[in-house]
Image (tube, rainbow, N blue to C red; front, side, top):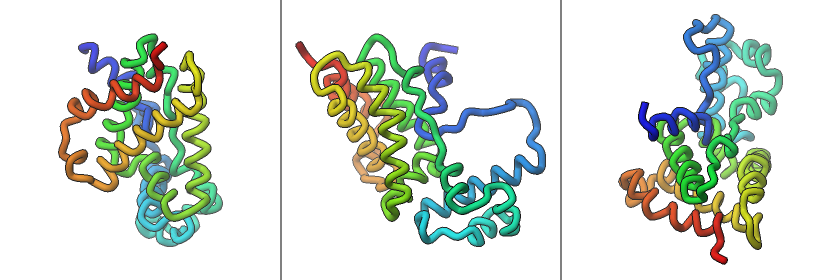
Length: 209
């Protein structure tokens, strides 16, 4: 495994990419059912938002009965929070080199969204556009998992604002590339995006003296 492949393997959980559990161990019937419900819920929440999504529609898409959804997840709110759960492993992506750190952040985010258009993070972003419940959850997740830890690595003034700007720029790039499909970003090679964006993001994380 070369250095790039090793880096990709270490950072696969970012941007809503789910870490494999029990790799090599077959799923039980209950685990398969639970996974189908979660996947169906993400698609429903992304398409129509939290308020308009119904347990009945989620059950139909997952090809289970409504009672099964309630059995596994309880309320719609509990299902929503579980369906859009993700973690950004900032500590694993951060190195002593600010430029390498921001490249890790952006590369992992864009790669994750590309591999899974219905990932928990993308589902939450879509749902946040139409509902305050999802928007508040997104704000809290981004603040706790990105702004707080990145700000702690910045040795300079305006650390939290700089960290928030890094997050906003990365989210803007990812959203326009993968959700809005803006032609110039959607059709661009990932390496070209990184080549131009990383110096800008790095200048925020490592402010000049």
